[in-house]
Image (cartoon, rainbow, N blue to C red):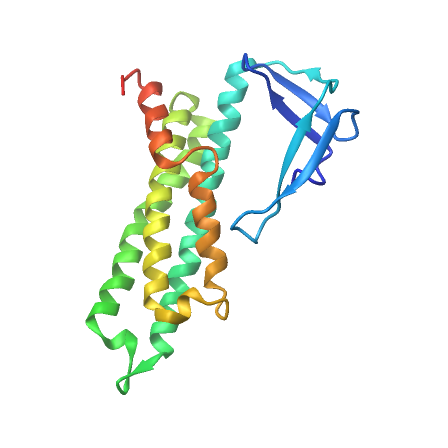
Length: 208
């Protein structure tokens, strides 16, 4: 949370990292309004602010990016799982035409497709987390794959779970919108899937 953080790690244009303490002169903070109400975001400004150089440079910056990609993928995985569970529970309770809507084949297919799309993502996210510590040569690529793929799968599940809820899904009454918006912001933080895939291609030495 930028508004209460005690320490900031800042990259300059050359990719070198610096440590800036939260009570340093010239540092300003302001709250940002986003679609995601589950976590606060802020903008931090630096004007002649003293900073302490950190070792690692671009390599350390890449590691921070990989960690961020992996964490966002894991967060989207969890949010998508919650949305599936809420959709299934709703389909078991909501009645229409004298039957619970979960008995209709179209709704069954929607729930099954969400589960089928999400299940392989678990291994993808777990391996990205493993690679970060134990397979550093694969860390950047697996983190990129996890972030890009979970961004796409998360959006599909967010939309489909909302559709299962019908008109109620877009209201504030069920709380589904919290997860929908969180998944949406996760998709854009540290680069949308298109940008992340371009970076993944560069990591492999491919020209896009």
